Image (cartoon, rainbow, N blue to C red):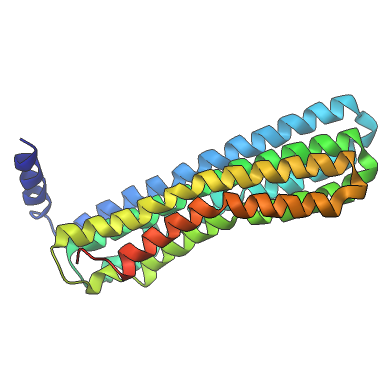
Length: 263
């Protein structure tokens, strides 16, 4: 039954013009890309909640609290913007439509490009958590707002790493697609293109974890500003370890694109 379905599916899509199938895959890829918007929504909501809570506890410091909240929430929006850019490219400026190569391979690349940036969900959630904890720390001890904000921003920048790596893979699939020149069964090459994008979803975890480290570091800096340097060092060390699986995901994606043993 499964074999019959697969055969039916490929017979079905082969009945359409290649541009039609590639366009269908592109719009689906654009839709997948915007799943990343879940992250900023959660992260920014958490930051706003902490901002409201901190303002309630210390209304006279509301200016500093709101400034920290808005700055941190703006950083958490980055992944959503990157996902939007990829989605708009797939819809309005899709280079794959005129690409040479098998229809299934190019269509799979369009899907993979959209799926890859789903990884941005993780950094956005982590960055939102960092923004919330920094906002909370400023509300408790507004005199340390500069140090807290600095630690928050540095930690958020590191947490964005996997989102940027996912964007790089997405852009490679769109503008420097190595699968178009690969020789081998089109179904294997197409699956590899899709797998290269799916692999990057592994970046969700590191993004959340690194953001958690940044949030706790900001919180600790608010309590002990004299230990800001040590706190930052420990945050970096923890974030570097948390990044490991994101690097693994990138390596697998690059292997599928440039050193694929199956094609």
